[in-house]
Image 1 (cartoon, helix red, strand yellow):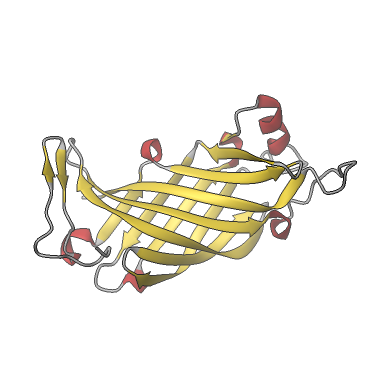
Image 2 (cartoon, helix red, strand yellow):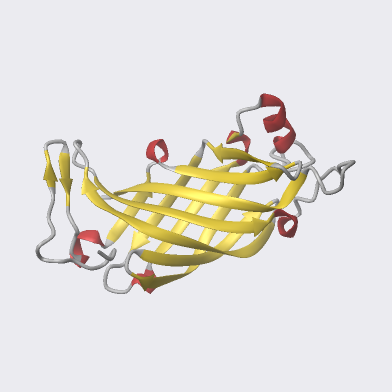
Length: 202
């Protein structure tokens, strides 16, 4: 099923809530990202041989979904850089320092969409301005629509998961250390991953 489509014979119910393929009127509206059920994560290559995963714990965001014209849908996201977590306090401190994110000087990372595209089925792409360390560059994110549901508390939710890749050096994140065996300690390419649950506003 597509995010803005409906098959008449598709319905589902459960004792804890209901999940249906909503029609256009039901889906169109303003949404707030639920941080308790969403993830903004990243993966970096370490020492050329393994992956280090991390995420940001403090963020806010809004979505405007337009069922009649998906290209008019928009999103805004603000991330508190001091909330970065990788499972290691020393590494987290280094990432917050002047070598990387300079969180005292640049406390937030922002993303503002400028374009939205329907790619077919449940697949979409949003393009927008990503600002890190005061530098703004374009980023495209591929998204998959995971469905819509009403939770046990009466909240109407939509879910997406997405992925993208960036070269951190393009945003001024250039710190590194050479390895004796060749190569560098931290990869320039960073993989981004997103799991988003958003609640429709009344």
